[in-house]
Image (cartoon, rainbow, N blue to C red; front, side, top):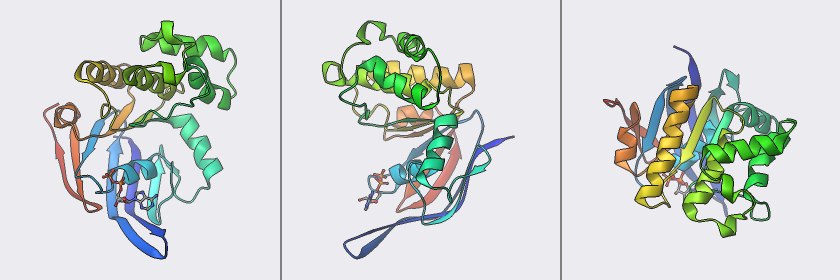
Length: 228
Ligand code: ADP
């Protein structure tokens, strides 16, 4: 099977105010293309840090990160951004939409970065897929949390990512809205074969993925297949 993500001996040390904190230590992990994985563990155990390193949002202190067979751990921010734009979708718990842009303009940003043409109709089409065609001209502040998360899904789907990372994608949503968001994410896996890597506290959501990785104190303590 093809590995879409491979990390070896990954370490991350944060240094601030002269103190250093080891947040990840010798983490090894590989993920098969098209599979679904969740990462669970207590608060502060390093989940968000791990996701950010895997997605190329941040750089590790030590170790190797290969995404789609491209070694990204040695790359600078600009080169990592190119890889992200091409292969990666990322969903943040707090949505991270640009507040001065409308919903459709937020979805247009990655399309523009990719140098695509006719980006407004494409962005509108993506918003339609997440059920927000009628909210395209609203600003994030005029949208509910669930709507904002669906805009961020449309944005994450815009480059047809090979791998989607989601950090607590339902963490700020009510049960009904969570269900809609979860369905959209898993539809992407089923229909486009997009690999899913989710960080979550929600064990019901985790049990929908094929594999659950438990992390504690910056170390993987369990890695189990589920019945999904
Ligand atoms: P989790 O997602 O499991 O809650 P995080 O990866 O967010 O864990 O954080 C792990 C640890 O790293 C925490 O102790 C957190 O305070 C610390 N941390 C996270 N980001 C930074 C940063 N940019 N600078 C310094 N420490 C950080």
